[in-house]
Image (cartoon, rainbow, N blue to C red):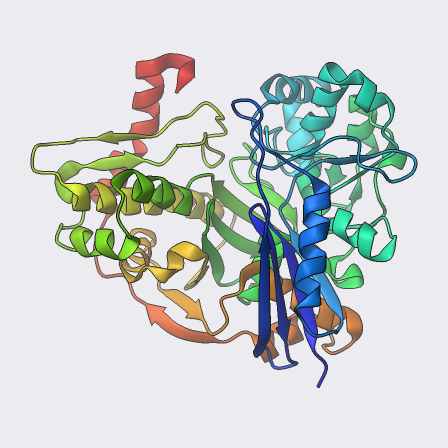
Amino acid sequence: MTTLIGLDVGTSGVKGIAIDEDGAVLAVAEEAYPLSTPHPGWAEQDPEDWWRAAEAVLARLPEGPLGLSGQMHGLVVLDDGDRVLRPAILWNDQRTAAECAEIEERVGLERLIELTGNRALTGFTAPKLLWLRRHEPDVYARICRILLPKDYVRLRLTGEHAVDAADASGTLLFDVANRRWSAEVCAALEIPLDWLPPAHESTAIAGAGDQAAAALGVGIAAPGAVSVVLGTSGVVFSALPAYAPDPQARVHTFCHAVPGTWHAMGVMLSAAGSAAWLRDALRASVVERDAEAERWEPGTEGLLFAPYLAGERTPYPDPDARGAFTGLSLRHDRGALWRAMLEGVAFGLRDSLELLRRLGARPEVGRVSGGGAKSELWLRIVASVLQLPLERMETDEGSAFGAALLAGVHSGVFADAREAVARCVRPRARVEPVWAYDVQYRSFRSLYPALKAAHGNDV
């Protein structure tokens, strides 16, 4: 049997996986690297760290057809010799608020959403280019090509400049409906089209942005089930049969990794990130906190958590949003804080699901992945808040697994993405809703407007 390799160039490290033609995991390897935050709100990495980590991971895996996935939106700028000009600016970098406003003014918000499926957000690639033009003109003047993170690794592996439609959709320079670079947006922003790599379908070059790859890895190849990701950020992802952006761009609409299909996804920036923050603040393990939280009834006697620790995307595109606990009383202990945090993240995910339903999504089940999915309590809370059964998958290797499936399609092991999913993706357990949370969710929906009103534009 052919061994298929998937490589995911993530924010904290590179993860690699080897699978067989039936999806059984043969080997896994990981290599970490640092994140640089030289100024408040900045997030950068050295692309050379990605390459060193990728080399190390591939050296520990068997050989076979390779697929790539990776963190989306990151900006890698190269000179005429393909040399990196500065550290990559990442998806979670927040420095470009002024440039986002400039883009929406230049293109027009309605036209921008029509073309790209999205409004200008600080994490996207295009505003980072405008920021470089304004703040680092010497660097900007030397740019000959730009790449996304995983595609820089592709360049080092193969010498090829290329990107897939799924990942290119997150640049704000892509005509998502027509699956090609947008000459209109590039002209409005004065960005040369020849800086952009050739764009292909994911199955044609065995690559996809991490969310599309992760969704494929849990079986989201067509409309139906939704992907629910409890990673550092939280995602609710639904395949769409046609291009259908939200008129207000409260969810992202991108090309899917399956040719001829699109997807919409809501993204909250602090899902398992909220859990990591509170775990460290309380100085106790997740297992201990879950056990204490189990002693509290749903709703924790009115305690609510707003999970906006790093700004927010869905449904509030607000880089200045901040988190809060409200409704604290003398009765609330560490377990109450922990449960309120788990519930707050679940409510944030429901915000995304409600918007996807307005675009026509009618899921009967969610496929759950990410580090937060290891908590049985959290899965019961999320299933209950979403009022949607959640399925754990037999293989929970995320984006790297989806990249390996793309490698199988590209190499001819599978006829297409749907066959890859049918052969390799299998549920292993199901978590049913157990509690009613509609009252608490309505209270949660009032949190952001109240905090915004109380603190003005600083919230």
